[in-house]
Image (cartoon, rainbow, N blue to C red; front, side):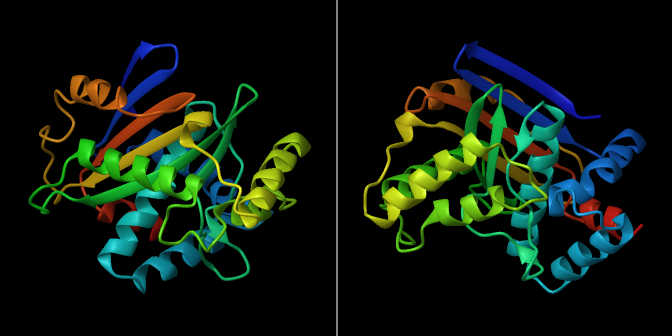
Length: 253
């Protein structure tokens, strides 16, 4: 379903290199099976209706927003396929828009993980997965420590609202942990990234012609990059997609 190379230099670091060259039939079936839960949790909605909501949202946005939303969606899908439980929703149900705050909050084997996604086009002159991973890690670190330019917006509050949604079915202990972090943030009691399990993620969209350039021979560079990061556990995820249109074509089917 996913073309993945997984490297684990030690027990606390995992590096995932994911190539999505096409939406194959197995991948399409997996999308169908998990689309509603990724977007709305156990809402009981009809698949075609939710696909239409996402499709219409994306069609009104510029390319940068489309890339960001598409990258985030496929990260949810990949992490679910890897055994993570999504403790958030892709959509803000009240607004019919993509959620705000942390890009993803997950649990795995009784541990909690925060994900930040960065994306871009292969046409950007200096784009690289390692560059986007650095950006994602820095955003996570700045958000946790209150150094972000958006630090007046409490990122934990949105995470708590999503985890508390009945259709997400997040465990009470996880909700309590997020609530305590949110309350502390409001009191300017911030956190450090070294105390968290983090998932910095990068997605590069190609221009409809597959190239190995962005995903080939990058594992060693990412291992070296990870030595500069602080964390409890680290999952680095780099996804290369043939085009931005793959998701829109699926939505329109």
